[in-house]
Image 1 (cartoon, rainbow, N blue to C red):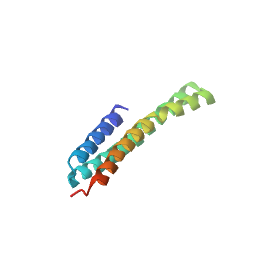
Image 2: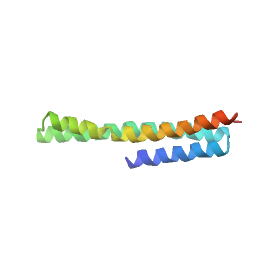
Image 3: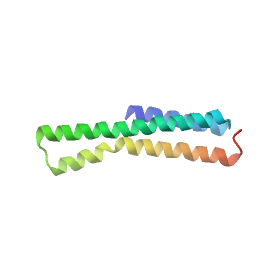
Image 4: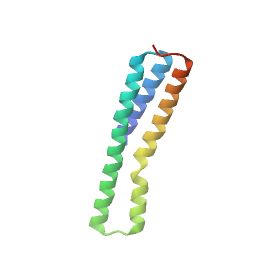
Length: 101
């Protein structure tokens, strides 16, 4: 979660930089940070799923434990996707304000 949060906040900062100074290198930075954050989100969700399934295999917990574990496993995706949506909304405003040259 911390890595997802760090990449997401960095992408937000880069999108605000693009809004302030419409330069293609800032847009490229937002794109690169978005990819890094996307991979961090996928890694976070998968590592959470590994933990849930490992715990269930050791303890033999039932269906309710599985549902709770799956619900908690998608938290990195919710956090990352929400912040990336905000970052790209800021990019859309920057692009709407004028050409990025």
